[in-house]
Image 1: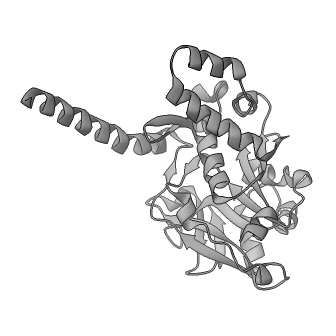
Image 2: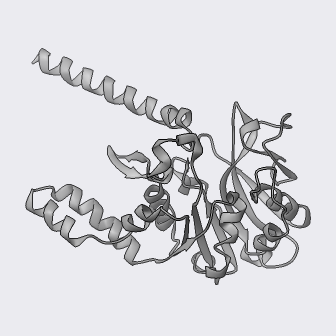
Image 3: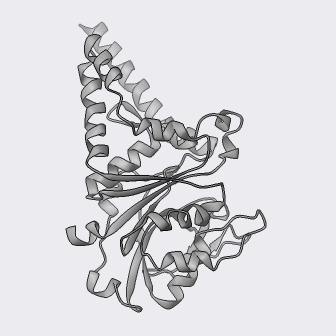
Length: 287
């Protein structure tokens, strides 16, 4: 497993316009929306990066567009801020930030600049920075809780050849599959259809995939869709016709790329915090 991870580059895509978050997204990438880890607010892209780091990944390409320098700044060490936190006694917060910086400094991270050109276009823009045989594609605007539980390393002996297993994708059920790439198949991908009007299943592609780098060739052959964008799903679909791409199902995901999905993510957290505060208040009154 470790050998395969050393031969894999993780690609995090953050090059979109986030039009579903306008006007907020004019100046702030949706990938910087806070998600919560043990009560601490963490930018979504940091959350996904740390998940991948903890899985064992050390090579990363983060694809950003112009005006998303805030993401690059977030991954840059700020010793003055750390000193300030130390000065005001925020030692717990300082420790968490130092742990993040340690992971960043222990990794090989390249920032690739790309114009908004669809999910496939963003992945393709990372190609020249990838010097490994495998890639792990991750969409930071989709949150998969405890993603490490669903990390499967295909047998390297079978993944290298022109036939056999060439990777896997993460999928989950959705009540609105027409908004995603719809996956057809049981244990292996038979087809993925991007945002179909009449979905053949309720399984959707979550934007997470472990694939052989040959996927770049399939993306390169893709023609722009009606929006002028290059999509990833049809490239994976064609790749699956020639070699096996396994399906890994996850029970839950949150699409924070739209306001409704982000609120759905926040609601149970807010409800839990409210109930916890009420219980604490009740206990205080009892004593």
